[in-house]
Length: 504
Image 1: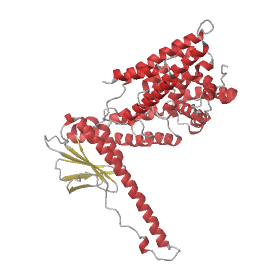
Image 2: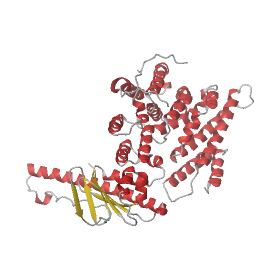
Image 3: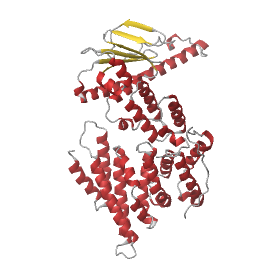
Image 4: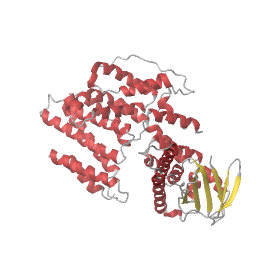
């Protein structure tokens, strides 16, 4: 239950619910103020000295442990809330044009834990239709308002939702969050009719992989929320519905280009390690503006792709070419390694979404790839594996059309090269690649999952260890298709098993 109050007098608070209305006078609490702790139970000093504890002593010890657990949980919540309040102040400072806050928003939990925030009526009204309706009833110029939301299930989530209203890029802000947290944010956003929050949460849920437990939660939560047809996209992966789916740029460009073109392999590896560490450190420092831009990184990506196409074109005509096989093989491996490094940076900087689409569109490169021996080309398939791992971890958020196109273009090549990848490079983690590929497949629609996994089934039976072992994905698809069957009511189609012949 949520009880809200809206008044102009900053010393009064009005709370109401369907069953009762109360008016009370009290001063504001300037910050979060938890209720007083309960009196401590029996301590060691008051315990009798005999060895066998009594039932009362055991109950006292259990109560003491429970009290400590509650206190630790409350302290963690307070630290997280304090972090959100600091973030809110930073947004207020950044958006100085909003002026002084004119609303005191207080959120109260069921056990009386209170958090007060200084916010702006303009932001609340623009972002939330709920607040817009409530605050429009009181338009006294120059008057501050008190808003109290009481009996909240989770104060921390309500505070974070308010912070999200001040955020310019909600999708980026949600990257790295877990599914449970985003579901909680979605619930609050829906309750206060925060449309941008609802949309961003749904986009997140549609893009990231779910564990089986999370899958149950997503289906349960979305079925309880009245979001009309906006949740259809999220549920397509578990239903039978088919998918219808800077100022430093100049310096950095020269430095990174120098690394990519380095003639000494040892120096090139050392500089890659150095730059990876430096750029990673920059990403943790919000005040540091010495950072590589997206345009610079994608310029380097296109350069590497052009070099790969040229090298593979030469490799297809190796018999008539005067080029040394060993030199050409080394060039292909170097260009592939360069591209892997840039993609790593893109993933670290949360800029890799567009590269998934770019890589999925490399049909010419994929066709050349299929025409040369595996020993020359297997390093290129590591880029596909790299993207699948990032998608499987939720570090890249792209639409399912791009995810499916990525696999449609490069999955066969990854299958063909997997044995060489595993044997030729000690840095390839077989389990990591298989898990990433499994998670990526399971984010697709049911029909796409079926098409991919049935082909994999036939190939795995014939190739064994030279094919990625994605049995886990097959198991999850099987349960979705034939056991749980989250079938969309509007879709009357039935899944059908088809035995496919796989090209050798």
